[in-house]
Length: 345
Ligand code: KG4
Ligand code: ZN
Image 1 (spheres, rainbow, N blue to C red):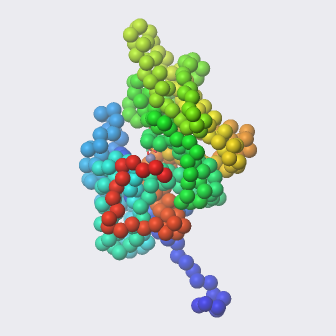
Image 2 (image 1 turned 90 degrees about the vertical axis):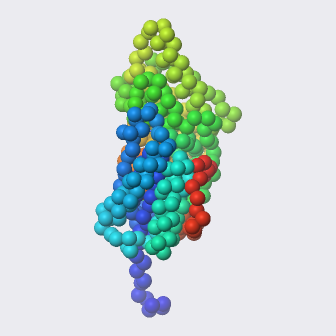
Image 3 (image 1 turned 180 degrees about the vertical axis):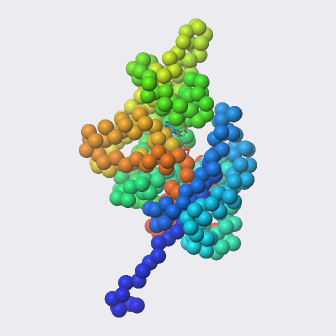
């Protein structure tokens, strides 16, 4: 065909992605990192709710039970068979080790048996890539705020696979602080979404909560804030006083959103970014989305946020990032791939 002037049609790359790092067993088929062909999630949250948090042993067991059905459903919903899939991707880090191992071993077996490339994906990189599925025009470089149950980070996204960290949490992640503060307020696990709901009808100025100082102005520290909510509730209980849960939820949410947004927009301005994105489970928070949108707009920054459905854990985001790992960084793994519980970006 060379020199004939006839274009060679390259068929899109279809990646089957698997995610099992915490309490969702998920599988998806994604085309060229940008289009979702299927996105299946089996959530275990109702079971973990009984214990007030994720029980790792239960999570691993449920992943084992669900993974075959979830993967089959992802392939079928995409209108395909395994032979139509070009590569298998999997979250290999970070997360609960037993939970990660289920996805990693399943993906290794599937890739090996079908002779397809295996692409390992870092979970937080996946969260960031959720934006590529929702916003076709978004391309690096940009600045990103990643906030989930295990991470709070401001980073420069230099390319689809290269990042550098500007600030990170020194103790609790934002989502962790939401969940622990929510537990003190009497909400079920995971509490972030309950605080979000209560905050809508609460007075955010009612309770004054601390804002910790950090040596690096772009680092976070949420542990003192979380403890002050717990102490406030306990002290009120001891004195027989009533805490207004809606007002406390609103005050807590406002403080977290103000800290995240203040540092993020300041970093964007200092480093000269006009494009920004947010990612991770906490990006679903309505107060944070609103505040960040407003303040980015005021600084002339275009902000990208995934739709709520793609903020939490899912496999489509893993399939998106896998495409870029494969095509930009040429990353593949062999049978020696292992799960890793903790790994920086
Ligand atoms: O990204 P994600 O689904 O899992 C991890 O990778 O950790 O994030 C889960 C976290 C939980 O802490 C959850 O409470 C929080 O995201 N979250 C929220 C909201 N929805 C989920 N936090 C605040 N407001 C929400 N609407
Ligand atoms: Zn996550």
